[in-house]
Length: 328
Ligand SMILES: [Zn+2]
Image 1 (cartoon, rainbow, N blue to C red):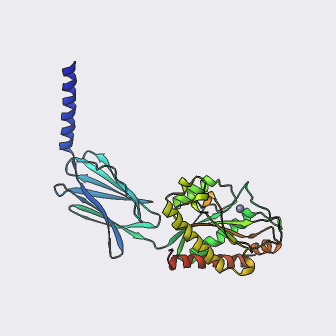
Image 2 (cartoon, rainbow, N blue to C red):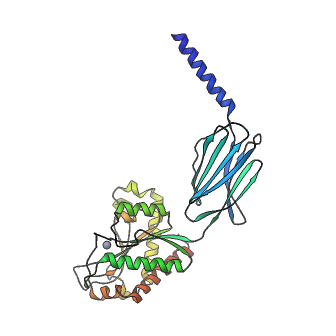
Image 3 (cartoon, rainbow, N blue to C red):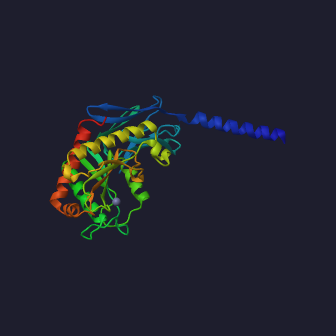
């Protein structure tokens, strides 16, 4: 019995040695380089093999089927992250072919391919448009607060979010993702999913305020608090990244409030902080309370398209400034 086990183990070892000899590691290295404004993801292969590539473009990436002249081994699954590439990996498609799969970020598109005997170069162009997520608060069965006029926060938030989206897109500098574009309920988790998927440069959540003091009016802006006041702070991510995003968010808030006339800013602390789940994103994020719909003047103003246009212009100036002057 003992000898049989040894023989079996020996045969298994032999067959795996065989497989190793048959299929070789052919991918030497994968790297990114930039040539004349175009990024190339390059894969270099062993010079002893030749291959025929066939490229397929995907909505969010590229697939290259590489048919080799001999049996090959798939390199260990490798994923990397870069500012244009979400990741890549090789998968064995048949004994002599590999599928090279590259997933791209939203603002990146495939432009060209180059092959030579031992390498594949996939070219991408990166759109300089910044991606902004605009989140209209509440919606559907969650109306938010009720204004003096009887209208609800969810409606003011939505109309402002859509107008903000249109203004940002019109500038040609931004691409905008809305978390909701109609009067429907969207859970916080659904919103978070959309926000994370957008891999955006900035998140703006739009709400309106309501107060017992009916005289209180004006805009206030929320950012996250310091990390010691954040519940479930592991979700807030890396310490340094958190504070970097927080300081960027505060900088934007101050800049935006600077574009808003005194009377339209809330008197007491317009820059606020709160442990708000929506703001826990992998990007700078603010929640803007456009005004207090419990106040007659604010409620009327927020229902006026020309006033909303001024607020939207202020948000756009602040975003332009944020991206142009650097975010440090
Ligand atoms: Zn709200």
